[in-house]
Length: 335
Image 1 (cartoon, rainbow, N blue to C red):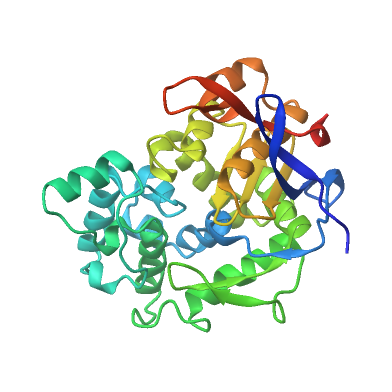
Image 2: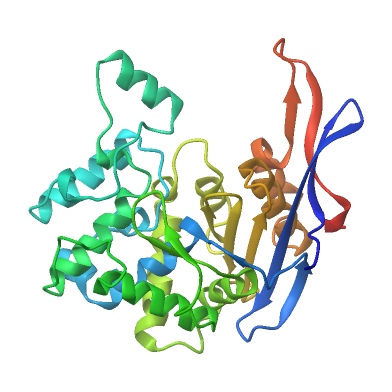
C-alpha cells in the first residue's frame, strides 16, 4: 500500500514537532487526475463532505419548490452548522412548516459547537436539542423529501429507506464508483456512511464544478445548491468556520465542504475541477491547512485570498501569554 506523504507540519522554534500525513486528489469531470498526493485509491468515509450530493434529491424531487424553500434553507440542508441561534431557529421553523418537531429528527442532540453560544445556553440554564445538531438541516431535507413524495417519516435514516437510497445512487453515479459492496458504517447523526476512493469523491465534486454531462434537472439542482451556499454562507457552517469563510471570500469560485475525521472536498467551477483530501489522523487543523494549500497550488487562491483567510492560512501557535512560538504550515509536498 502506498504511503501517504506529510501534508502539514507543526513547527515550534524552527523544529518540526508534529506531522500530518494524508492524500489529495484533484481531477476534472472526465476523471483525469490533475494533482495527486498519496493514495487516492484507498477508500475513505467522506462523512459530511457528501452533503451537497445528499441534498440533490430535495430539489430533484420537487420538494424544495413545493415548500418554497429559501436559499438559506437550501444552504442549511447541506450544512455542518455550529448550532447558533440563526441555525437552530431556521431548523425549528422548517420543522414547524412540515408539521413536525425536533423529536422527529434522528440525529440526536449536542451542544452548540460555537463557544459563545454554548456558554450562553449554559449560563441561561438551556439544554441542547436535536435542532442544535450540526446535521439537523440535512435531516430536515430528508424529511421534506420523504413527506413530499409520500414516503414514511419513521425510519427515514434506515439504509433501505428511499431517501438514503437516492443519495447513495447519486454519489455512485457522480463518483463513477459502485457502492453496493463498499464498506459501511453509521455516521454521528445516525444515517449510513459509505466508503469510496478519494479519487471518486474528487470526481463527484468535479461534476458539480462542471455538470455539462449531467441531466438538465441535475445540472439545475447542483447550480441552485451552490448558489444557495454563496448567497447564505453563514448557513453552511457558521461563525469562525472555514467553509463559511471560503463561501464568502470565493463566491462562484469555490464550493468547499468539510467532513469529519480530516476530510475536505471542493468544487471549482471556474476550472471545472474537483478536490478531495483526507488527513490520516483525522485532524481538522491539518485538513484546513491542506485544503488552502491545494487551492493556492492550483492558482484558485492568490495572496489576497489567503490574507482574507488568515485565521486558517497563517495559523500561528501561541504561548498562554500570547507570544507567537510556532506555526502550522503546508509541507513541501505542495511546492
